[in-house]
Image (cartoon, rainbow, N blue to C red; front, side, top):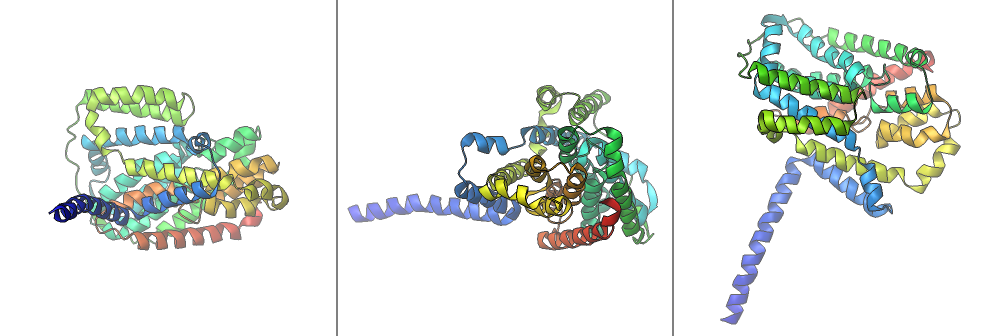
Amino acid sequence: MKVQQRVRNTISVSIPGIAALKRIELYMRQNPDLTIASLFALATTIAVPVSPEQLVGSINAPLLATLFCLMAIIAGFRRGGVLTYAYGRLFSGAVSARRLVQFFVFSCFFFSMAVTNDVSLIIFVPLAIAVLSAAGMEDRLLFVLTFQTIAANMGSILTPIGNPQNLFIYSYYQMNLAEFLRITGPLTAFSGLLLWAVTYYIPKTAVSVPDGDAPTMGRRKGLVFALLFGVCILAVLRLITPLMMFLIVCPALVLADRRVFRDVDYKLLLLFIFLFIGVGNIGRLPIMAAGPAQLLQGHEFMLSLLLSQVLSNVPTVVLLAPYTDAARELLLGVNVGGLGTIIASMASIISFKAYLGTAHCRPLRYLAFFTAANVVFLAAVLAMESVFI
């Protein structure tokens, strides 16, 4: 009897454990990007001696706070039907497929110049998915999201506030605006021409975008969300601190509509945290501390471009800047280095996560097409290297 009781107790304990493991396994299969990022963070943490303070220091808290607030606000607009209505009105009736694609690609391109590549993708990628799906253009989603991402990464090159690496270089090397624009202007213009050429081959087939239903959000609540969005823009433009933004936006959202917090993509935030930790750990390797000083001389552009493919461009510029005075080559290298792998610019993760939320998504196909398109775009830019460098 005692043996049977022990067996029953063992089974009762093991079954919940097995069930929990199965749930974890299922979650990992459904979220391969998060799984890989977590293993990357864990492996580098084990391999590289790092203190808890250093781990926390690797995480870009201001960026995460900004992403969190923006996702919550955009969720509010989406819940109220404002965004669908606006785009339905803008493209009501028949419109060409080419015009629709060009609108979404170049919205990211130009908007990123003012409010960073991350913010432009947060705003325009979900809208592109909604509008293209409503127009029966689901087969174009992979193409549009890929080139929206490229457009955001390349458009953000132009201004010091377009992305974090630009702001770092602008302040680190004490550059003035005219000098900065002389460096980034030709590359941005060339990228815009490439994007136009790519989208030009989308057929001018007429598609119909259904009219958006009238928004259910009241004017007062809509004004509150618009003002909160403006507060986020002030933080992006560095006119207020991210902490101040967070302390204003979150309490206001609780009072306006606390349901928006349910629609925040917390997995995306967690993914960024894992990537920040892993990339930060790699940057602390002894070879990364000593190697750049010996390799950089005369190779700033190419080395920063290649290093961005595995570290992403923001950690790369922070790592290399102390070893060189070649601000021009470093600026161009880390920005062109945003093309290539999906982690070359962490903003690219935003589009990928949005695509994973679509019906019939094919992650491996997306990654293959995204990488191929980035490599071709990168090759075109490198072919013009003598113009920029």
